[in-house]
Image (cartoon, rainbow, N blue to C red):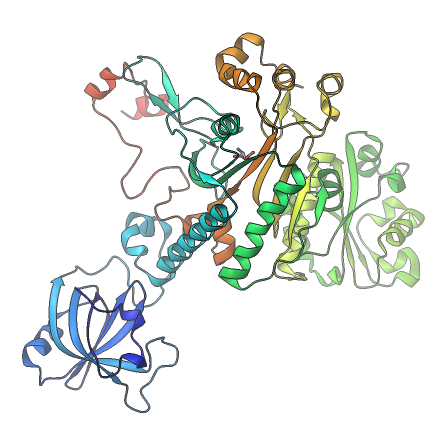
Amino acid sequence: MRTHYCGSVNESHIGQEITLCGWVHRRRDHGGVIFLDMRDREGIAQVVFDPDTVESFAKAERVRSEYVLQIKGFVRARPDGTTNDDMATGKVEILGKDLTILNAAETPPFPLDGYVDVGEDTRLKYRFMDLRRPEMLNKLMFRSKVTSFIRNYMDQNGFMDVETPILTRATPEGARDYLVPSRTHAGSFFALPQSPQLFKQLLMVSGVDRYYQIAKCFRDEDLRADRQPEFTQVDVEMSYMDDEAIMNMMEGMVSSMFSQLLEQDLGAFPRMTYAEAMQRYGSDKPDLRIPLELVDVADLMDSVEFKVFAGPAKDPKGRVAALKVTGGAELSRKQIDEYTKFVGIYGAKGLAWIKVNELEKGAEGLQSPIVKFLGEEVALNIMSRLGAANGDIVFFGADQEKVVNEALGALRCKVGEDLNLYTCDWAPMWVVDFPMFEELDGGALTAIHHPFTAPSCSPEELKAAPEKALSRAYDMVLNGTELGGGSIRIHEADMQKAVFEILGIDEAEQQNKFGFLLDALKFGCPPHGGLAFGLDRLVMLMTGASTIREVIAFPKTQSASCALTHAPGDVDSKQLRELSIKVRKPESEKKEG
Ligand code: ASP
């Protein structure tokens, strides 16, 4: 139906007759001449109709925004003074000859001929129109370039694309499962995969050697910001490669992707242990673009009278840390109050601070509500440890270690953003040597990565002191966002059973849930490892989008539903009967009904 995309018409086509198909982006009537901006996936071209082509001119008068047209005409150079350098097609226009209206359109729910800020509810309800906006279509196009790049890279490095089941059993990744009732096995349920983890490990046992898949994963998580119940992972697994080789392979992919698709050089990917990341940045995904660091000062505070500091300083599970912001003395009281509220989100009970006005005057030169409680000597010792200078502000966190890390870690990023302290555009890194387990509130242990991650010690050492064990897990972090994570896996049944035991999974449950894995590990499982990248997050970072919803064609709302199709929806009682399911309405709905 067409010879060219609107967006691809240029000076090389001058003099040619072409046919375009697309939407009316904008229509202008200029004293007897009608201009139609025609839009398609590739861009916009200007078509001119003059009254000489009587029939087409009459049709051009009738068309409205978003009508679908086919237009035949001649490409010509735009007259002097009317070229538009901002448009890829701005040097040419098409003198329209024939116009066919392929379809009419009602007035769109929001204008498309210029970016207008529309509420997300409306955008998601009319997602098919929202995606028609060039900004959105360009993001989808970019996403497609990313996946195509990944497939090529994987192909060139000998990876096989293998599909794994969607109807399966629970794969523990720390979230709730989405369940699918089985009709043929009344009362039994499939789980949608939280990741293809166990299948990709089994593929290593089968000899696939290098596997990848661009896989949909499903996690029914509590509604935290910017998560989607279904999302896409670039899932990878390889045999006979150690941690370093796997990290290098994946780093190669991400670096060359940034350089080819964005012309950006990511530079080196430093490796940092989890312990160091927590200590210096209060986070296991530090944003290394920001040159601020947490500094421990508990040893200077443990004998002050001020309990807020002395308490956590003496508590083995506590932490007292300081964050110096160079030039931060300019922050207003109001801003400091806002930061105090901000750290409250992470459980901090307050935010102590010292502004360094005139250090040469000793305590008198320090402006702060807390110096009087610390005493001059302690305050000055802290300043000297931090290398503080006039014009700086120092924030403090004193609480349980977890609270201090989370609060000051988040504050570090917030201040870095607010004061634009970034030292570079991209800061990639790997975080390594994570602990194997973390303690839940009741004292039980849970796997930090997943239970199939190999520890860096023997099963005996692991059982003797599980809380001290480190894992062979690694996370790739870019600008403070975790892009991907994975690990060397357990490839021996004994070790796998030791981990299950520590996690409180008894023999019967091991057999019931993971019998197939334990079997597979007994039949010659090669050493292997892998990781998974969050594709949505990667594309978000690369396009500068503000949420992952902007780079997913049909995302769910913040409350895990689809504004377009109204999923999840009711099903009729016959269907439920077939599935042997009886629905118990939540109490809240019973009262209303
Ligand atoms: N399956 C893991 C996840 O989804 C990634 C990996 O270990 O490969 O987080």
